[in-house]
Length: 37
Image 1: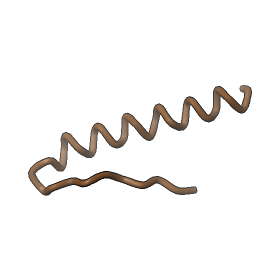
Image 2: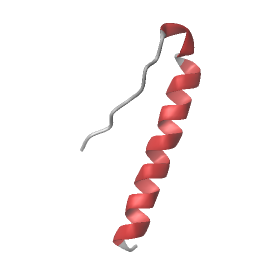
Image 3: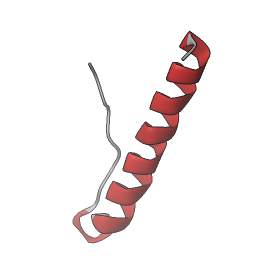
Image 4: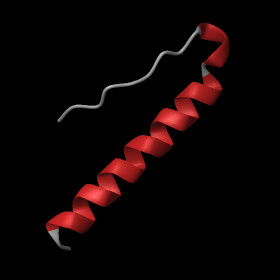
């Protein structure tokens, strides 16, 4: 895969994770996630 595809794939995965956590933890006051490698 090209570098651009890898970046897009990683960003999309992080976006999905953020949306899932926001929905799951909305009652706990979820404020966002910062994913680092």
